[in-house]
Length: 188
Length: 188
DNA sequence: TTTAAAAGGTGATTTGGATCACATTAGGTT
DNA sequence: AACCTAATGTGATCCAAATCACCTTTTAAA
Image 1 (cartoon, rainbow over the protein chains, first blue to last red):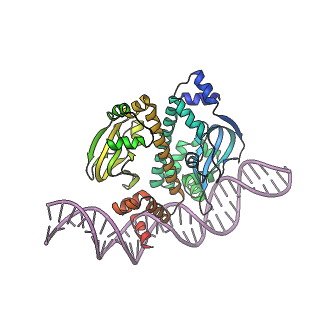
Image 2: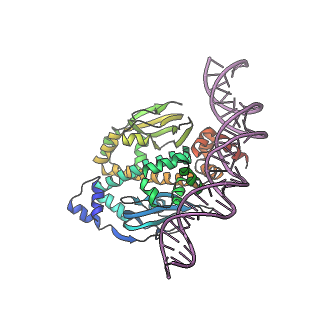
Image 3: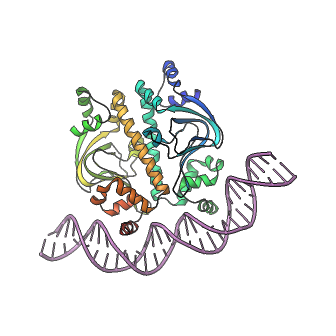
């Protein structure tokens, strides 16, 4: 919960009272490797703030292939947002890659916090703004760049992930085959 | 300005006073076909709410090819959000496809409105939430679907655009070549 | 109404990656 | 340590879509 306060106060400052009120909306959950937080078909009750560990948000297409929408780590928020916001069954999975801990927040909690505390509505808006921009950049990348460029961009942005997680997953994130990715860094 | 009120009140209700205050932040601008609202390299002062007309948000890659991030029409918001939010030079263009009219809002105006009126912060958060979800769905599409499926999805979502704008632009939006797109609907 | 330019269609050719098929290595488990 | 499974690298083959080239049709402009 200490992290939570620090995380939020990167954007807005909270009084003791506000924080006391706020934290009642969050619950802590430890997660082991390979454990699912969200499974396709689920009714998605929570979004998660990662305190520790690494997670992937992915879906399985009609051919059974996995595609990763997001890697999440410390201080990242994640869930199947389509299901969470629209209150429809999940089409995605959220799975733990490296064991860790998350804070869980219900949609009701999120909306209550936003309504009660203007500050928190601001916090969520800023977060969404950043997320929106990041997604647009990802779309730009998917529309125009070659596997080579995608790989280079990824290694610049997340050099550590490159080491810590299987290359197969990186391929699923970049939208190239495992084999092609492998040949890329062989090439230089 | 009538549209503006209606548009905002789809999400929050405003008092007369609030609306009077709010509308001072917007300016009207008529736009002709082929006119640019944002040009690569620009300092992006505004985001735009489309009142009338059709617009495209695109960028030009290193090979000189255009890629369309967004089509915008009545009641859509648009700009080069990366440049607008981060206050860096534009890497994108916003160009008018069918003449129309937009309402312009500065980043300062947006932030002021959000700070002064909790309602408006809520409005923008809800809008961003929807936008975020839409972008995620677009990424999912780009990661997994075939040109065929992209075309079908697009014609389901925007059958009218299919008629009103050049197929070349649709190809640039879907991330397939003009020729491939042409052969797709020849096929059925 | 003529002329030019943009949009659209379609065959032929090329090609970047996907796919397939193995071999090798690294990790994890009992 | 032995065993099994996951991760990775790499050659060979294949294929969907890009590219190239050109023609027809539509639209807009002079």
